[in-house]
Image 1 (cartoon, one colour):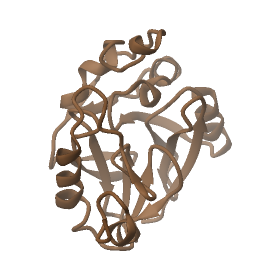
Image 2 (image 1 turned 90 degrees about the horizontal axis):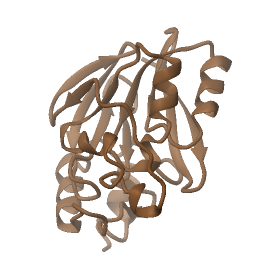
Image 3 (image 1 turned 45 degrees about the vertical axis):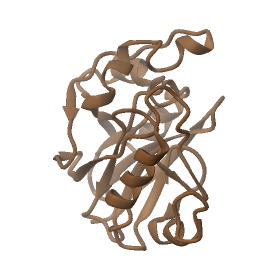
Length: 216
């Protein structure tokens, strides 16, 4: 299966949202819509796609800020998030926006997912792997149907870095253990699409990441 991924980067946190669809399919889903939902809609319109799901790796405000606008534009698209971060959608303090002086919330989740679950969205099978440590219920979504596999990774693993662990519910030992258990077994060529910064691969980070790689 050929899977297309287009990035929409939004200020002020340089957060990456991703529009994802399979070749030949007119349906798409978005990962972590941030502060520029209009740009997500522009991508959908350019590619002649219909949004069928809003998928969140975790509940921090920069990754859910666009949920409400997209849900209003595509009311049949369910909001999907890991069970452990669901409260963050509707609680401005929990999603950190309240701490920064602006209250942003999302509609509640339509579907909660758990570690090990598999779901099919827009014709693409996603495997849920829970990796807490940046947030209590952070999940990543692994697409095994593409070659190489794709990891829609949120704020777990970055090119040369890892997600912050100084937010409420954060834990570096937990994050490190999750990366080693849930990401390192993937093929080295597996592409990681992170919540901030450029695309990387599992193999590159396993070898060179200064926080969790072999050379740390």
